[in-house]
Amino acid sequence: MAIKVIKDKCKGCKLCIKACPFDAIDMDGKLAVINEKCTACNQCIAACPFDAIEKTEDNKVVDLSAYKHVWVYAEQRNGKLMNVALELIGEGYRLAREISEDTKVCAVLVGDEIKGLADECYAYGADSVYLLEDPLLKNFTTDAYTKVMVDAINEYKPEIVLLGATHIGRDLAPRVAARLNTGLTADCTRLDVRVSSYIDYANKNTTLDTSSLDPNDPSTGIKQTRPAFGGNLMATIICPKTRPQMSTVRPGVMQRREKVEGAKGELVNVKVAISESDIKTKIIEIVKSAKELVSLTDADIICSGGRGLGDPSGFKVIKEFADKVGGVVGSSRAAVDAGWIDHSHQVGQTGTTVKPKIYFACGISGAIQHLAGMQTSDIIVAINKDADAPIFEVADFGIVGDLYKVIPQIIKEWDSAEDLFEASLK
Image (cartoon, helix red, strand yellow):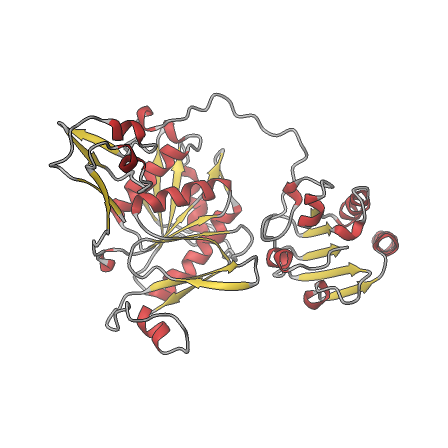
């Protein structure tokens, strides 16, 4: 859909400009002109007293062959790359190599004085790094980052753009997609290459209407899989008519590549056109939270508690357990909703997706929403009084019993093992 100004009816009253929340209307003399910021929100249509603005079908045909390469938004904060950026570079590398030998995975760095991060991107698989630097980009602001990303995508035309489903990625991705008039699949758990939209579906027993797909379409693309209906099924989504294809992926879902020290690639310095007038918000001060911070995505061992703890005091036992085994404390949504622990500890579909070496699920029944966030852990140990709890279906080791008796026993055995190890070193 697109917004169109009818020239013969426009009186140049500027009421549409006042009504537009996105600064998507400019004046060309006495004629209103819709710019690329338009999201088709219809506010201008309602505000125009002369019926000079209408919504029309956008029948513009996109030349899919003009788009090439996989872009990964390499999110950085204070000059440090986020782990999800390295994970997506690894996933982008896999996709690029499956698409064609000529397809590259390109990291996109946005900020100020961050050129030094390019080497880290190369080390984890990036063939190229697109560098967007400006003092106005030092701290993330939605307006500034959206503008420079949209400008760069319009200039270089990547086929695929991947972003982490972080607070920043979830803010930035939909705004960029709206400006580009393309689709976005959020919170993907899997990405696969498809060769032809017609071949991929027409030869399968499916209810999808293939009448709109071109059997001669040679274009490649990606199948974007994400949980739907509360995690009760997995939906696979395609973007056959527009480019780029955009996805956000939760941290901890994709596998990063092994680091190759000294790896090099192409550095592309992108000319950034940004001014203070493009930014509606001004950052006065950045205040970091004083509460205890937890990094679930980086933890090798996570000890999580759920409703089975009975009350918030149960997390004292979980904390003691986590400290003893060198892990961090996680929780189910039920414990967070009950107010027993902060949301930053939540694991699951509406929390953090994790992939530790060992995941202890204590008093957690194993709802599908929770499993979606931890079932790829290397080893899952479940402790629950209910022998029929769903968590046991995905657990590598299960202990049926009262966690308040089981956990102290594990801690005792851990202490004994440590004593034996220390004795062996003497």
